[in-house]
Length: 350
Ligand code: SF4
Image 1 (tube, rainbow, N blue to C red):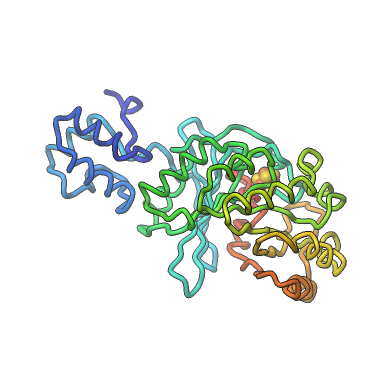
Image 2: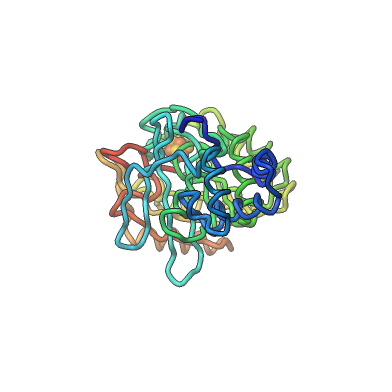
């Protein structure tokens, strides 16, 4: 068997590994051991699976290898955020970010769901690249395994906020979520799917009654402003989106997370804060404010601390829980809106 015919252990479900060990005349117990080495101990080589006999490891190496993705580039921010550029066998690359928050044991992986993106939000570096292709479920989960293999740490939270619109690759994203849940044993509530507002897919997601969090990239209190930065609003207007979110809450009982990028002079005014309070009044939601990170040659500017605080206070008066997202990794272009998936000018997004 040559190198390209080898099975890839990363991404194999326990039952797939059992089928492999069965084929090799070994027990289900061996399959369990291999599964742990892949998802929990995150080895890079079969030879590191030290509780398997040398002879069995040799037999396994003749049939399989751990992974076929490469780390093409890696940058570590002064705040501990790590951004990876991951290359798949066909040469396409995506970015994945590991965020560590001070005083918390949480290790959050921000994963990509597509190479490029068709949605074309104007504040987003990924959107500028256009849509290239969907990622398979294994390509999605490989991003997290790559982080675990590289750092030796176990990721505890997943956010689909990297490159791509997860709802436009929902079938594969749902399979990846199931692997995160069952194989990585990451609780459904620790997985967040973020969307620009693809209404039919939000309805589909609602019908699944998943316990995972739905986050909406809202970014404006009305369609007039939203269309200036998110062309998707022409297809799925804010008013209709709001109805879909009310329906989602009704079906799932879950609270929605509203993501709102504050851009100086565009959507960070007092008037916008008041309008947003009215819009979200009857929606069960938390609000996450994200100060804009300028991308190269972008026309939009970062808001002042004063306008961020005023905006936050006004929303809080309406009784909502409002957080300002800590800026992570902005010195390595890993902050929201900055990823792009290129080695030379890697920057992203959602
Ligand atoms: S913000 Fe998200 S949906 Fe919008 S272009 Fe970027 S990756 Fe696509």
